[in-house]
Length: 265
Ligand SMILES: [Fe+2]
Image 1 (cartoon, rainbow, N blue to C red):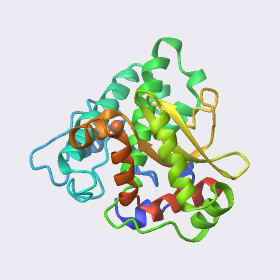
Image 2: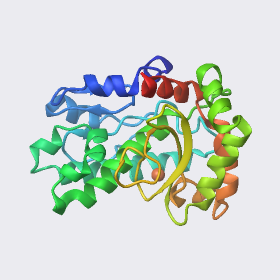
Image 3: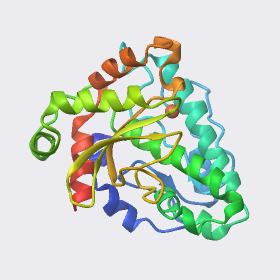
Image 4: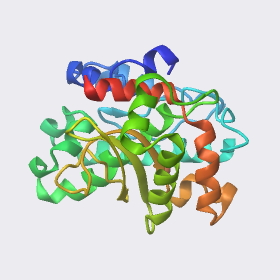
């Protein structure tokens, strides 16, 4: 995804997303059905010659990374990026496609709408959709908000961080604390709450702050860091703190600001 695309509205694009037609949304999701969608799924991932992630057959698709696998080195090495995207994220997409195979009403929904409305999902598939639509949404955002030239928070984002979280250093510290405090697997987040203010929180597994009935701090996520071991173990082993410290060097703050703008939109 190029910078222009990443800056397009997240929720605005979701609202415009219709079922059936393949399209790229501001969140980087590609949805759609039919031959075009399947062809796009078979497109090799940039920087991985011959590698074709297995996402099964269905409406949900894995978007190629918007940068080369090695673009975030030395902070996140290419091997971790390749396995994380091509295998872990691809598996969430594959499992999600399988879960909606016989449920056209669910297949027509965006992944975000699925996790916002888990109560409407039949009980026998609710768990698998919670985990795999959550994993799909979380990782799509994760790739979008990273990049090799992240810079620093600016503009409205910096103003919000200063006003609501006490500044960039306290925000970084709070996200790091949330990530370190998450026992087992999960995510640490900066969200925009219903009051329009930023808050820091964490969720277990592949839960997302959009799952408003299930999480401690609901909201629209504008930043999220994956603290599953698959995100860092090859390079950092058990040193989650080292990974988190390195991760803040590869945040694409312009993409985070675009998500803030869209969430407040
Ligand atoms: Fe992950």
